[in-house]
Image 1 (cartoon, rainbow, N blue to C red):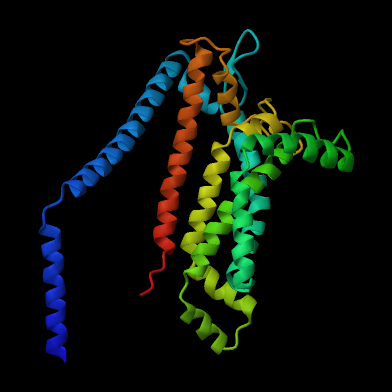
Image 2 (image 1 turned 135 degrees about the vertical axis):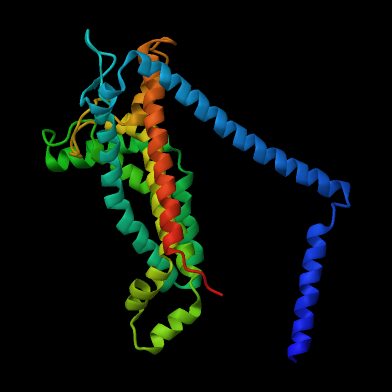
Amino acid sequence: MTSESLTVDQQRAAISRGLRRRPLGRPLEALIAAALTLCAIVSLVTTVLITVVLFSEARVFFQDVPIQDFLFETEWSPLLGATPTFGVWELVAGTANVLIWSMVIALPLGLAAAIYLSEYAHPRTRRVLKPLLEALASVPTVVYAFFALTFITQDILRPLFGPDQFTFFNALAASVMLAVMVLPTIASISEDAMSNVPRELREAAYGLGATRFEVATRVIFPAALSGIIAAVLLAISRVIGETIIVAIAAGSTPNLTLDPREAVQTMTGFMLQIGLGDAQRGTVDYTSLFAVGSMLFLMTFTLNLLAQVFVNRFREVYD
């Protein structure tokens, strides 16, 4: 039996080597391969060109504004006053403000939904609830923005806590809508990761007397941790890059605070403000758009690198 098994393995290896060495004999296959190669090259070239244009324009900005002022000043007012200031940290603080509070809301809800769909829901219930949850991702962000402004702020926060506690534009209303926006991302991807955990692990845990909650939190959750981390980091990237919700609901006032009751301006909100056409091309106001964009690019790039490190660190491979 060992020799027969070895022979079969040798035959499979020979077939695999032959397929790898086999040239594309059909013109359609060659055309498909060329089209796929062209798509890959176009995406790569586009990314490189975007990066080159972004940093080349940012270099022009730093010829007029010292980089130490950009990195170490704490006030951002490029369009106001006789002496504009370009301390980027007020914009970074605004981005961090909505990011922190949206994750505080979205993470528990998203992970709880994923655990329910994966471990508790009946298959028929899952087939109904999961598409409904994912449908939240198809709602236009401008709808979320006006809902945050008119309902969350005017009808809930200000009547409940008083108009003196929440400004008309505030970070919390934007954070609530950002949490709703990324909730399908966290829940759906985390549920997929949990569902891919081998059933044998569940059966072994149940065989040892574990409850369903213990299986979900102590067995399935750690086993699917790499996929869950990927879902969370993807949601964070979406929050950082969101523009319309924060521009409409959070306001346009640079503010070095993490208080969700106050108005803030995020990095993307400022980029939208400059992109509306008020600043002339070649001016410092215009090139500041690319300086802030470069800062945002470096933040998201670092986040993606960390995502790869975490995913590779916690990845579980099952046969």
